[in-house]
Image 1: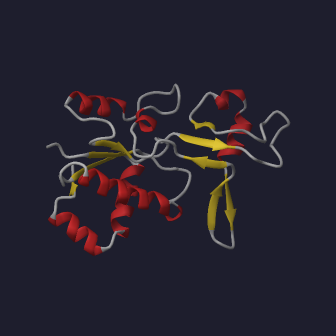
Image 2: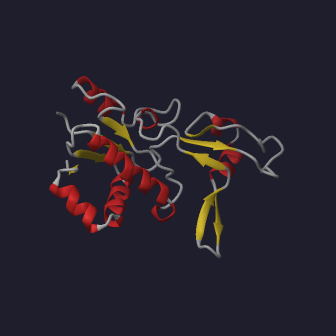
Image 3: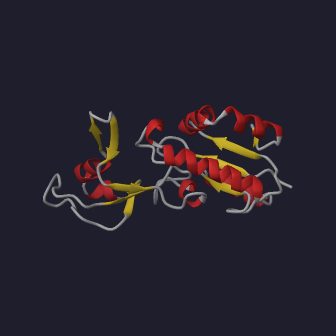
Length: 186
């Protein structure tokens, strides 16, 4: 049985979608309201770089000492590889060639090959939900693959996200993980 693989992209390697519901916009031609659309990366900046930057900016709350996205953002297709295989709609391959090579060797997307995209605009201290999702995805990958340990493949900032995740996990989980081969390293 193959070790299930979870791919964690680097900085700017996840597709981000935004939904606008703003009282004001930077310019009259910038949208104030919209349904979800591809924010990173898309042809949107070509249409208006100022509008795009305004939608990517973070707002800082000095009381809570945290940031939040200006529009409502989401990372679509959690657990799938499709939103980390390509950078945006037209900008080039990210994990595509690795996914393609693994599929050629018998891996199946969603069965033993997964993606863990995240909102790279936020820091690790603001992505608690992502760490919870990664914990559940790891458990699912192991459980649905006859308890064969997961192999994480992380690139650039993804490595730091994985390290932060492992540092936040309780020692009992790490002990259990190492004893039952939940995690493999490459």
